[in-house]
Image 1 (cartoon, rainbow, N blue to C red):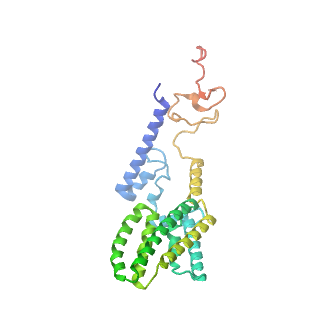
Image 2: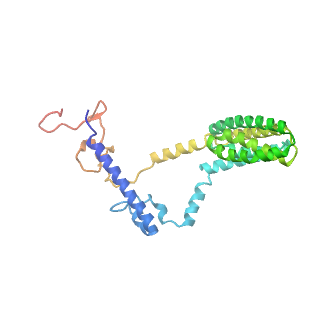
Image 3: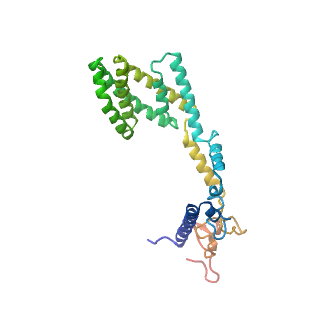
Length: 297
């Protein structure tokens, strides 16, 4: 088995040189600030650090940079804009449902919308499933505590601090299911100290989370259900189809150029300029025959 050919080595050298130029430009900006931006941006030829748009932000002021950020996130192609519209519509619907149907503790439904809605419908459905399971387990546990303790507020006062500590420590680590279960227990212990409650508080908690989850899922299906997946696909497609700025000389006019790791690095293999039927056999490019020696083997 033979090792990598010279084309692979040349490609590695070109990539290493590009990385060194990028590092040089970034180091200059980091050390000298805007004074080093001129060398980093450069005209794209000579000793400059690369194409003129690589460090374009280094010479821009903060107001213009903020304008770029705002302009890029105020259209339907922005994932942040999609999330904001989706979440705003879901919150409006949840508020309307809580007001029209007199849903008890309707802010729990709105809180479920905020905490469970994701950037696409698939993630929202998976998150809602785990959240409902966790809320159901927490509601059963909270209902049992409320039935056993009754109106003894001292019991709830002793249980609340360790439950809060456990919920805030374990919830973010174990996932949304654990977080919803522990949060259900915490709010049950807190409400039991404010007013006399029964086990039906746990039932109301589960109902509110169920309503909020359903609203979030429906809004996720209606407003950009694929979310960031489509925008990522579009961005990658634009990147692949965009013309690249290169310091290599233009290809000769003898035929359509096919870039190889050695193109622009000399004329050591001039036959790699194009893939034509005369130079391709079984998918491989072969050099032309040498004059006076017959066909190269």
